[in-house]
Length: 223
Ligand code: SF4
Image (cartoon, rainbow, N blue to C red; front, side, top):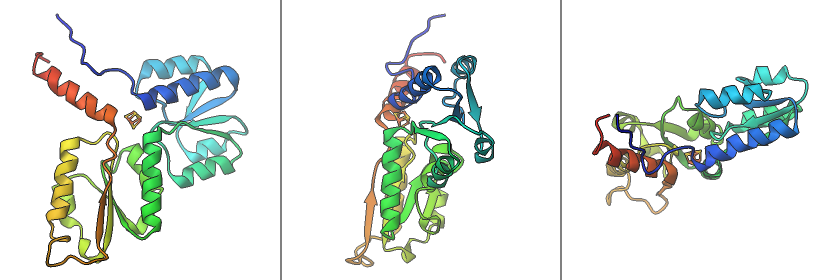
């Protein structure tokens, strides 16, 4: 069988950075925990386990640890989770990818200013759950498809800020943004000087490059 490798493959910058941090901490400190598996890769997790790194899955589990270092993975966590880990007295190392951290800052800023924050992504994804936790719950929605947009009542919101899960499909993001705009909220007849829609395309370039490489590769291979 002939095997072709996509132009872009392997760990992205953010995951690499988080994994390196865990390996380094495992040498320098003990005990070391990761808050959730640091990566979706069983071999790496098993290797880290052999080096003494344990995975904890909840704040309750973290609370049970009398001491140690806990590393937040590249997906990031909610503001409340981060604060609880610190309050529990653990040494917290934040390995949230800087691109995800930027989304945390954006949603916090716009939510504080009273904007409705629309996150385009999967509500069950840990990154999205983390992002939601940096925004005000009463003015945050997660949408994923056209029917989610249809359910939105944008007329009650004068200001809207849209962001995306870093790994969301770029074309689908564009489509959903256009549908939101076409809902008429910003049409000539309803436009209001105070109304505003701010779109931050926060899809990571590593994701976009991998999506394009996979598409290109799929045209040349059988599977
Ligand atoms: S935001 Fe991009 S670089 Fe960061 S962890 Fe996600 S895919 Fe990797």
